[in-house]
Image 1 (spheres, rainbow, N blue to C red):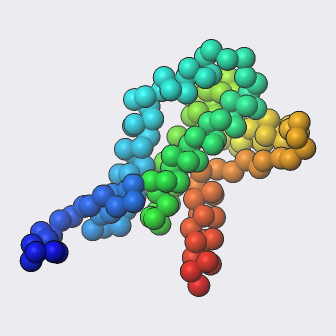
Image 2: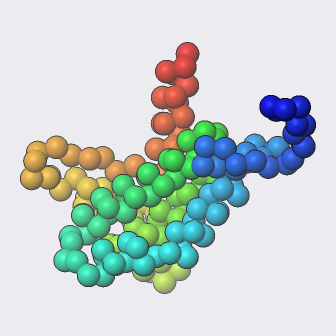
Length: 154
């Protein structure tokens, strides 16, 4: 460092919005982001509770916010499968809530595949301006972003 100051070794450091660990695991970051989102639900709940937005618009807003939030904090990490699964579970909880679906524990017909199918139906409804957005799971989107980044560097 400047002035001859020595850096002390540490197990964890914050860099580009995420925690870098000596074991290169992003699970802790994902859990912190989910906890933060669950602790401050009133931000999006104001939109959902006090507007007459369609299910499609609610899903679009939630998708945009979660995509931005998770992408910023996790863009510099390669996540293991359990961490990606945690992202998908968080997304499924929100989708079930927005679609008014009960959990699979209560209604066995509401499988994850059914939640994704209904979400894709809402997403595929044509927009007024003529373009469509495709729904993707958070884990799938993260993996595609990492692949794009690697291809740009190569």
